[in-house]
Amino acid sequence: MIGAGLERFSLNQATTKRWTVAEAVVACVEAGVPGVGLWREPVNSYGLERSAKLVRDAGLLVTSLCRGGFFTGADPADRIRSLDDNRRAIDEAATLGTGVLVLVSGGLPTGSRDVGDARAQVADALGELAPYAGERGIRLAIEPLHPMFCSDRCVVSTLGQAVTLAEQFPVEQVGVVVDAYHVWWDPEVYAEIARAGGRIACFQVCDWVTPLPEGVLLGRGMMGDGCIELRRLREAVDAAGYDGLIEVEIFNSRLWDSPGAEVLELAIARYREHVT
Amino acid sequence: MIGAGLERFSLNQATTKRWTVAEAVVACVEAGVPGVGLWREPVNSYGLERSAKLVRDAGLLVTSLCRGGFFTGADPADRIRSLDDNRRAIDEAATLGTGVLVLVSGGLPTGSRDVGDARAQVADALGELAPYAGERGIRLAIEPLHPMFCSDRCVVSTLGQAVTLAEQFPVEQVGVVVDAYHVWWDPEVYAEIARAGGRIACFQVCDWVTPLPEGVLLGRGMMGDGCIELRRLREAVDAAGYDGLIEVEIFNSRLWDSPGAEVLELAIARYREHVT
Image 1 (tube, chains in turn green, brown):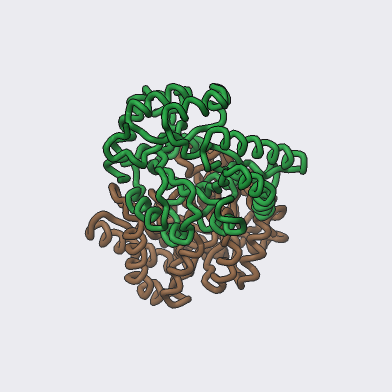
Image 2 (cartoon, chains in turn cyan, purple; image 1 turned 90 degrees about the horizontal axis):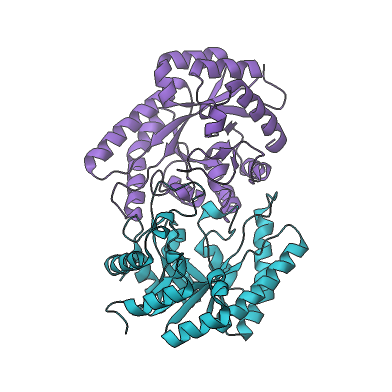
């Protein structure tokens, strides 16, 4: 049974990273949470088919699989390996019954200073993969990552850039992720959300808190602990036509050290207070 | 005498932070460096008039004074204090004989989630200060800071945003800073440099290196140690019509712990290799 006000709540399992797929699924069902965002590594640790059966039997919606991408490479062999791995990720997404594969596109190849070339590699890889994904009912969702990740994780740095990339492909094959953490600072974010419209394949929330930790990856905050206008972003995404679930996705080493049940309970309370 | 190939080299004194104004000036003259970028705190420690005389007697060009700004505040009293302080900064810039006051515009006021309001405060402050600056021969130079500083230092996050702000004012009163560190990731950076044209009041270089340190402020790299296409940016700034000096500005705790003379020598070598 879905909890009051939780009709659109989805737990991205990175938020409770120490839980297995089974632990996350059981906790979501108990809490009345209708959706989960899954990650490839814990899914494959638990078993792909076993994970698929588990979420299906539990009646949970798999809102996305994280993640494909990392398309950029120093040589053709790197890029061939990446495409092979992304085809596997698409197949896994299809097995899990989600329609969305989140893409973190990759940073600059080691030693490269050519961000333009890296961006061209991302476009090329999408061209290779989009039809394969479309045939399997999977939508590739380009996630713009905060510009502080441009060199080492993702050369797609703004929502506008992601939308422009996505628009080169059929709407059912390629969409975008709007992750509040990555886009809140952008002076163009509301205009770009409106432009994204039906391209929005996934909406994720957490909060921006400072100071950032070393390496900056694990410094995301719980909703309400930072400065992002989450409700305004949610309303903008809704107004653009997005009616899917909202993933809570928080990479935070302190939260990972807390019991998963407490993190989920807090996330639900903060979601009600700051997002819905 | 200016060193070979150093005609446009300016040492921003933050790069050799432990040096007094006098130490920096002596070292620049010895190294054949024609310009310095000064900071208010060390200038005021050494004495404003005394610093002005020192650089004038040494024949150094003061390429900028850092910094004014921090316009955003939770209440009107904060904003009045900020405007007063910025008028003092403009006066100091005039005394030092530079034409450029670099502005770090300020982040979100404590507890605020309204980045739109903070941006409006920046525009309002510029409206108050631009004529005052113009009367004293000082150009306010809006520096877009990397989006990772949006919440706590500067809500002006892209060059395009800075140019649009600057364009509301006469070109001799308000310009922009192009700091490679803050803008290199931007898919629009080359288009925006071209659009900036005669608004470019200052060009700064260092490099982007990862992992970023805790707090991210002191993680800038020496030119050549990271992934920024410095020469391409320099050529773009030149093509836009900028013919001023190029400031080397590196906040890096490891460099600050090294002898200033070694840092300057390395900066000169790397500037020759990666910028000119």
